[in-house]
Length: 90
Image (cartoon, rainbow, N blue to C red; front, side, top):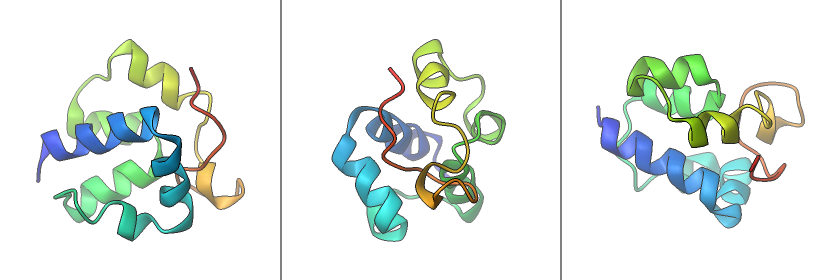
C-alpha cells in the first residue's frame, strides 16, 4: 500500500481534467502507473471522503471541497461510485 501513490492520484484527479476523463472511461489504465492496493483502488474510485480518509487520514480543505461537489457516482452516470468529468469542484 502506498499512501503517497493514493494522494498523488487524488491530487491529479482534482487538477487534471484529462485524467478525470480517462478515469471515467478507462480507470484501470488511468491508475496503472500508481501502486495502489485493491483497497486503495476501491477507495479512490468511490470518490467517497470517508473511504479516502481511512487510507490517507483527514483530507485537507482543498481536497475535501473538490471531492464533495462531485460526490459519488461521478463516472458512472450517477448509478454508482466513481470519478467523472463533472468539473473540478473548485
